[in-house]
Length: 234
Picture 1 (tube, rainbow, N blue to C red):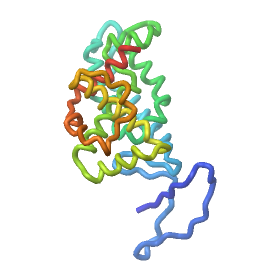
Picture 2 (picture 1 turned 90 degrees about the horizontal axis):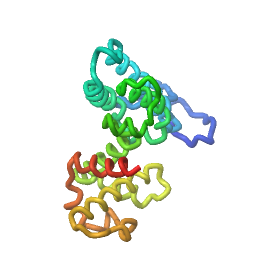
Picture 3 (picture 1 turned 120 degrees about the vertical axis):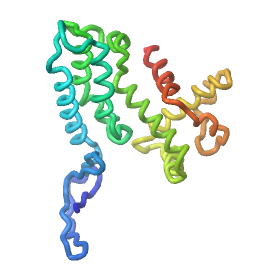
Picture 4 (picture 1 turned 135 degrees about the vertical axis):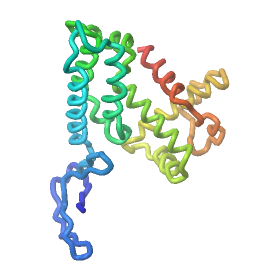
């Protein structure tokens, strides 16, 4: 058993008294791992991102160590293995920690795309990603966020209440996730109603608009189509 104290980054140190439970002293730690997620006292998740990067490199090395441009796994097989083995590992609990650590994986992602494409020099990354059907990590993150929020708001009253509170907390660090969810809802309502809702998109309220219930029913393909259209448009 261990204890981690969370406090503002500007505060460099605190003095804490010893913590005892049932006569046993509990150690204070700088970081703690819960369900595979490493939490640090500043909540920037940099240590978790560093660990996750090492795990991804290790997994990718084992997949490609016997592959060259002339023999071994082809681009299609490498893409499937990357998505099923490496990307799923990287995106575990992504809505919590990945947003502020996307740049940590920038070089890794570039090298993965270069390896799969078999190019000798760095081709235009955006074009190569589209050809290989490997979305940018930012897009993958946003897909996971939308899926997580939709699943939460449709299944559990406690989670639904937390999301409603988050919607009203304009300065919250995860406020951008609510905006992603509203963007998806607006897009889906456009498909269902075949009307232009751009003027009302900013006024959607997850709490007040009870007509959103049918829209909350979703498929993974719909979310990928929504983010895919934004990706291809850029």
